[in-house]
Image 1 (cartoon, rainbow, N blue to C red):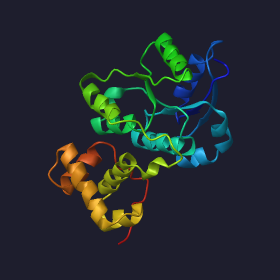
Image 2: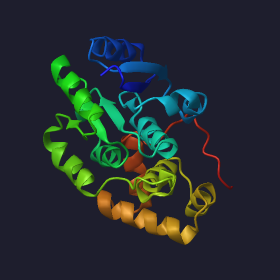
Image 3: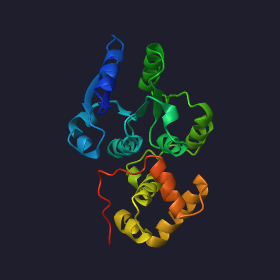
Image 4: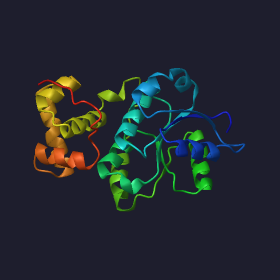
Length: 232
């Protein structure tokens, strides 16, 4: 499998060391990187992205950033497999699991045995989609996310898709933005933003946007190091 190369996206040295050891066998893929889990990091490594056959994105330290990274990778290379590396599936919310299902081609639980992970990587190299995760009770939610269908494999940027827009809306709600502020940030109308908010409330099972903001904050959709921006 040495003719199969993968770009590793992670901020964690332990994951970098583990993946390199996992792929060090004669039939393992070549590992390129790592690059940080950020759009800026991806922009600075365009040459490497164009040469690899797949990308592996570490979801462990920041699931929201990792999901966005999967979407960015798909935007630059629509036909390239993107593999989510998950250390603890039970730490992910149902919402994050569903969004992850719509943002990557495969997902690997790093708590699996090394033989299992190597077999999964060989399957990806053969063009298969592999979801090797122990999800417990959240398994049905992830199954529903997969059943909603894969992203269109076209040149269109996934940022135009509903899944990514919903992720951004819920993140901005957690930051306290109004519909008008979100509309300006996402280049949509306030009316469209209102529809997104209503649909999110219905799907998550909360009564209003205040409860939705509280839910989003509890589930990791707020990054205090990033300014909210928007219109006053």
